Image 1 (tube, rainbow, N blue to C red):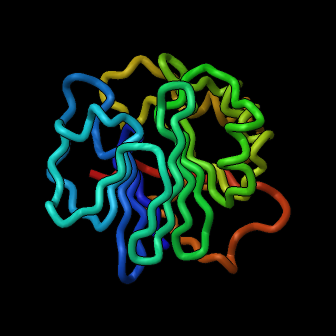
Image 2: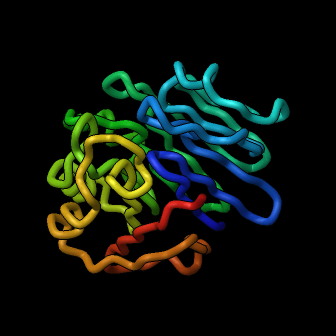
Amino acid sequence: MIISWHGFNYFKLKDNEHSLVLNPYALDKDSKFSSVNADVILFSDPNQVAKTKFNKEAFVVDSPGEYEVSDIFVYGRNIKGNIVYYVVFEDIKIAFLGEFSHDDLSNTDLELIEGADILILPVGGGDFTTAKEATRIIQQVEPRIVIPSCYRAGSGKLKVDDVSSFIKEFGVKPEEEEKYKIKKKDLPQEDVKLIILKPQK
C-alpha cells in the first residue's frame, strides 16, 4: 500500500488494484482541489460531499456504519460531531481521526480505533487537536505508525502550528517521505514510527 498526503486532511491509499481517499477537501475558504478519482471516498464532514468533485463510480461514505467494498472494510462512528474511521486495507488497520478537535476520547470511542497499525490524526492545533492532545491520543491507541495531518505545511491559510511543535512534543525522530510504501509484514514490531509526508501537488 502507498499512502500520499495532498494537504489539509486529504490522503490517498493505493495498492495495485484499488484506491481509497480520505477527506478530499480544503479546510480553508480559498483552496480548491481538482476532481478526485478513487474506488472509495470517505468524508469525516458530510457537508463537504456536495462541494467535492469526484468520479461517479466511486463508493462514497459520509455517515457512520460498517461498509465493505472490494476487500476494503470501513467502520465509521460519529465521535464529538466528527466521523472517525477505522479502515482495513491490505490487511493493515488504519485509524483516521478526521477533523478531530480538543475533546478527550472515551473508552467507548477507543474501542473503535485501538489496535490500529497506522494512526492518522491532526496535530496543528487551532480548531483541531493540538500537539499535546495528539500525543495523549497516540499513547491511548498505541499504533505502530503515526502520520500527522492538519498542520501548517500543505494546509492553505489555516491558523495552525508547524509540525515541528508536534515532533518536539511527541519525542520520536521522524522519517520524511514523498509517499509512504508499507506492507503488513514490514510494520514495526516494537518502537512506533513517525512518518512526515510531503504534500503532493
